[in-house]
Length: 433
Image 1 (cartoon, helix red, strand yellow):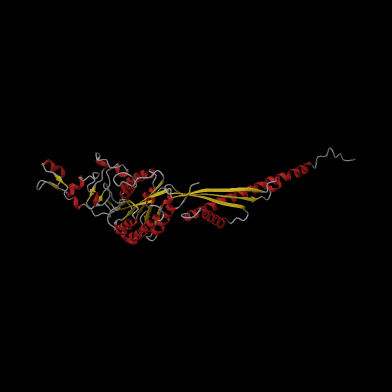
Image 2 (cartoon, helix red, strand yellow):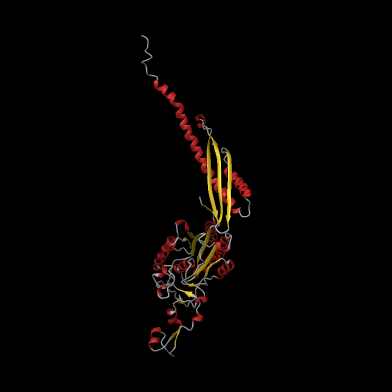
């Protein structure tokens, strides 16, 4: 019997597979080509970002042609992708003294395909672009530095002084104009010292100070301010000239706020005290010599009250009383930072603590303060220099803007590298797009 070839379908699957094999391979090949292209596009973007940042650091004083030449050179050095063809890298550089500088960089090229060429697509076009902006961001940095008695141990205060001065140099090097970088210095212990020049300011409340240091106009009058007045006497704080400049915490609830002092509301005012406290603060300034000189004057004395240091560091960044930070220009973006370094746990504030044992009450006030500071858009770095085996400070951890901005150090020698890292993060040029 002769087979009926027209009715026999046993070999159809092989025929169909043969017919479908070419498009299947083509689509698989296209996926491979697109995957290669996606990987190369990412590599192009990374190379362009790196090259643009390097050029931006050298851009001042260069011509447009020189900018392009450097960008092409740096891109070729960091790209190292021989499969990229027909590469073109160009940059547009603009420099505005009031609003900063900008490099707009573009890279284009093509990738020869391996599979898609059979579909008539011999290559895929690739591109990358970015905008590097600098000089339109201004820095304002508050340094809250622990100068308590324990800082004299293990070389901590000397290391902090050296690292602080280097940080000032590092940040000031980023200033193209004087107002690009401002720094304040707030040494703290249980109090801070604003300096005696402020003694006549109406935002100081001398009542408590007078009870301890003033005189009653009636000879032999009771040292109680109330009893002096009831006897027809006048309480005269005539020893203000002996005030050392020390300030304690504001009354609650204002101890955790940056509310400007209101003369009619005593709780918003600041209370002087007559004790041996830290060296005077330096409000925001670009007088680098004065800042570094004050750093050299810092000495270890007193108990630990981190909230009072942080509160005045915050106040130093505010364009209001008591320190009146310089006004901000609408042409610039302002980045505000606070660096808090302490070697111990809180032991005392105006209401609680004995100056030697850990006070959770002070921690609780600091927690509220830090909530408000961070809500105000200030980036907070916190550093614990723990050379005595103290527990990790949970409040310093909490106050840091993010976990990576809390540093636990176990030796004074680590302060320098920590300040270097923090200063570097503040100084980085920003990839805008």
